[in-house]
Length: 461
Image (cartoon, rainbow, N blue to C red; front, side, top):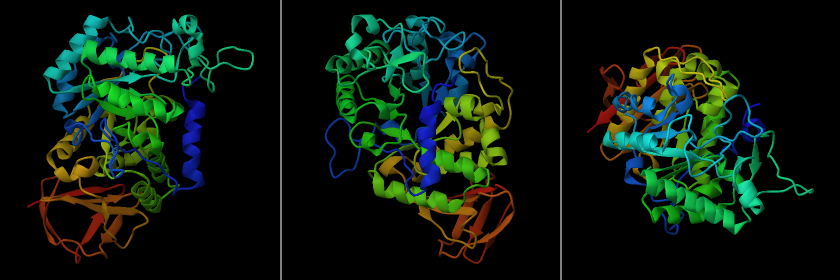
């Protein structure tokens, strides 16, 4: 059974019930109190960062830290700034799903999964990443542990109990038992464990699983505690705004992700994106960072590859996810056109057959790094919609800061469009970001867009 079936339903339902109630991911204050609800002060290295999710088990035939480390150079060459490793802790054996179990059933918070190697191997991998200028964050599972985690015996009070006093599994996650964050001892245990990994291995932060299932009051103590050790990046798997005020640098833009899927399938249109962004502007601090993605480990394994969900619009929505305010994510394998759902509880190595997507993502990463208008949070340009004759199927916008301007036009339909602007635009000479062609743009010009076409124009004064 999949890890997050019922949880995922709770995220999807609001998209179909009320498009305006779309949520996002923002930022927060670093580690001190929020001033004027601006949000977190992020590490400087986040502003132009691209995130790359790594599934160690499936990355190489060996499925080890040492084998993965051999690929760090190619990841760096693609322009990746941060790698996020799916959970690296030992996996529980009691009530295990499949032969290898779920990464999210943690048996020991202070150790590495022997399937991947040992602590020395992990530290060597982190050191190599750092030598290449790549930051490393690890996936942390704070909401639950495996049934055979030592805490179930040593501190049974750390867990939620049913009416009969038995441990409880949330939803259909039968391989894990849920923690009780009313217990101050548990809160301190988690903070101490997080500090251990920062001090012992010199990682740069954490991605926190199902962060919204844990009280905000806990998260508001985590950030300052970790910053006593070093400046860290905190990413929440959640789209709850309360998490973004004082704790997290970035959170998932789940609802926009679902809107993208629905547009690709002809069930929504551009108006849903406009409503989503209107909600974002009204609900979140201006320094917010949203993580944008067309795939990740959950989507790939349970809901289908981006080719299943997005079809011919795969590149279109990848461009969209990079050009809008936020932090883009690549899930390992997307750079080689992986059309397979990776098995979650078994070994299933990524088929590394090269295609044009590696160059495609490299170009997007270069654009993100080299153009200040595309930076995340308040350092980047604000998205400004540009109206035209076909605003149901075509999404056009600019982002501009000082001398950096980017002009994006996306055809979110399977039909060709002849698009012209009804808004005034800044006439001038632009460079096509993908072809290098120089061209003049004005309100008198019509732009021919092929099905699912995308245009990115640059202007640097």
